[in-house]
Length: 159
Image 1 (cartoon, rainbow, N blue to C red):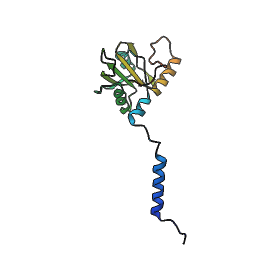
Image 2: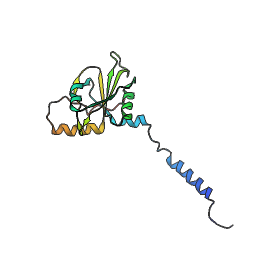
Image 3: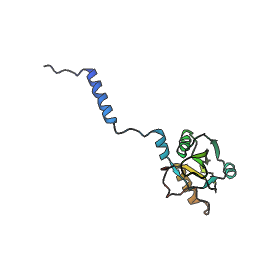
Image 4: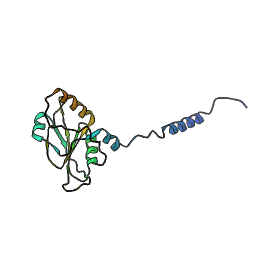
């Protein structure tokens, strides 16, 4: 039996089998799940102070028609400059039914410019990298402001 070079088709077939085999178990998460991991839930019952935020340079991007907090955050992920998803809950319901979703860009000249006021019935979700920048800014700025996010709150589980 003469040993020669293997058939090129056989080599291609082996490479494909190995590529498929090694690729299993390394599936990427769906877009929506990866997106949710990039956001953190803020303190409940804080609404955007629109006048102060816009005056500081915040930009309103859109208000998509969605019915759950998760979908509002996913809509924010689809907007390249969105870093805050503000959700207005349906009064009197404990389930994740919302009546409003507002997407904003809270960065202006590399600074976090959104300001919040207490109001029952609102949830906010901020992109984690923007939150980290906000914390750095707060550590150098004046104290006594309403905290925007609660570090002890979990992400979007249950929302």
